[in-house]
Length: 363
Image (cartoon, rainbow, N blue to C red; front, side, top):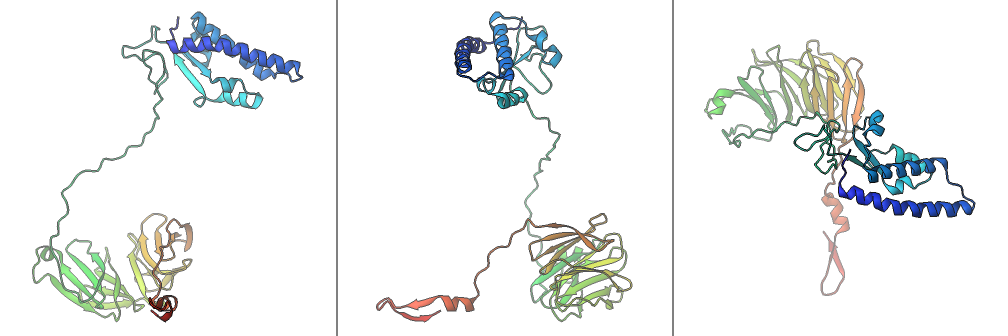
């Protein structure tokens, strides 16, 4: 026989009085002209039968064996069982909201740790009340590993203006920087790390506006640069000369990126478009239009979407390189407020005299 805790037995005794009250109410409504629905009557009889089993201590495992209960008894809340047809159907199908699941603790299948014949992922105490089911998730969140705090190694003071772009050579032997002084400087990485005075290898001049983008080619000894002068240049690092120009942008070029597997160059700028160039022939393959403001960031990858662009219009676009069309637009970023222009403040911030309480001018 199943043994149930004292709380369940008290609930069964209280249920007898509730049954009499509910029966009286149903009887009164039937005399008043309202007939009890068949579903409510069946549920009431099932509930009464379940309470009778609890009071008599009868084994309920056989009644629930075909349903996979295995010694468990499900009691729905009284407010669910006392509802009409629509609510009764909901109560009959509810599994966790409004249901009490009980399991006997005196069977032969009980384990030494107090777990009974319950389903996988469930635990029961000796009292027979099931503990909350654990959710079966396969998510494996990696634990971050501690590392020593980063420390400043070297400071290189070479540019005369803001440093706008940095790029590393694929061989990891040098890196290039471009800035507001319109020049490109190439440094030896090993010497720069120890602040050697001869770390600067060469200075490349040719841009007439700040340099905003740099990229090394992984398959050729080329360095590509883009600037606010609308120019995109290809530098041969063996001769330190410009060998190609890519003309097409109508305003400053703010971003530049090489394709990882193809001989393609992608640039974006203030004209709100991203242009795809054939690195060898200098021909423009695609002009990716759709942004409403400056294209300030570009990412390329070997699999679709092969080009991703970020713009000052707060959107990110994923592009199909073969078709030259936008695949998806992400709009999760939001614009932040900007301070009013000083010329506007002069029109709206008057000066007042504290003595006469009169306007005396404006700021």
